[in-house]
Image (cartoon, rainbow, N blue to C red):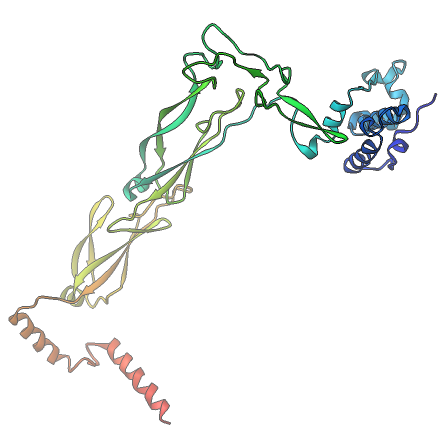
Length: 378
């Protein structure tokens, strides 16, 4: 008896995409599945036919061969396509339905290796360490192979055995109405094996928690919120899979003198009003020691002086930032009588606080105030 066209069996067009093939198959499989048609031989045969069509059309290579040669692509006598020599249709409908609907309910036929989770370690460092770079030791918890049972989880002289519930597959099928759901075995928890006499050191886990010390190299120029990744230093993988990574999250402590903005450093330098008026030379701090800074006469409070190359070297492009010093003119306190007398005498020579010659900024301000009120009265 000639076989029906696979596309007609599923009721789809020859241009149907993978999603349409799956949708059509699921709909027909639910209709003709033997669990819903107990004792109906024709439904069982129809289900086999649907299954056969689906397994060919969902496979790209088989579909291409079928589109080119038809059913002959899977005939032993076809000389050009012996790769697809025989098609076999299983009669284990529980397994079939578990495979078909696995993408809905999740689960797999065997426990897979799983990469370990990434870990994060928060590290706080000094500004000097961030600018110049340093090395730090950290101690973190980790899982290592048990030295008593060598990772088997079983007591010395014994070994694990195949799980009797799932027969070593790690998965079981549970009937839910007319279809089957695949889930992890609740006896071996998906491992496929059970340990009758667990190791007393690791309690059957094969791994024990311990601590390891790592030396972290902090590159020069690193900043707050930067991260350093250490490959394979994270959580141990499952079933021999690769370990996760360890991320070291950097936070730079607040410095008592300097503030950082990108690759530049800022600091405030107080000077007295005599220095500001007459000029002079002062010493200012840097992360490499002190340097001399020349203060020109008539320097105003808040003026910014740039010292080239005394900032931070960028961790990305290695460009060197600058140190910017903001001078703040400090009002003197705790004056003695002589100092007060000298200041009164000096103040008299300024012709008041609006002195045009000695206080141009004050003059501009009060002239602007006068114009403002004059405009209001017009």
